Image (cartoon, rainbow, N blue to C red):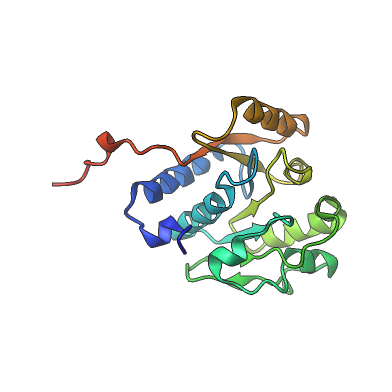
Length: 219
């Protein structure tokens, strides 16, 4: 729960930042609808999984039906965030060619938010994510939600994120303040651009707090 700031401290500046991010994403969809969103980072440990989870929370709290998919089949973490069983998940759904009625979705404490955990770690994650069964699974997920958010591996760490991005509506790239290198961020952007991924923006994690903005609404 410590990573779920939107639930732990919903009045915090960080939680408000996720609500602003939700609004920005919704406005970016005015010209071209966004139902499936991939969230990736440049490298490991930049906060992309926590960002995906908190964004999913705020979207559900805004009245949307949301499914959060742990598509990081190399270092999955959503089952840990949500304290969920991970015996069955995304890999199970793909291997069993699950349809909308048999998806191993799990409920959370947030109304309107369900999670598809990673399931067992496969020997060939990239191959599993790009086949025809994955396309059918995405369609089945879209039929049950307003937004399907995919937590994907870092773009420069594996081929998974760019490959999966070709099947989804948009990509949000997560950078970490004081950590992500500028040249690495440029390489990640280029890798996504090469597959014609629609990058709708960048989310900055671990950014220093601006105390001058924290007094609004206080007596």
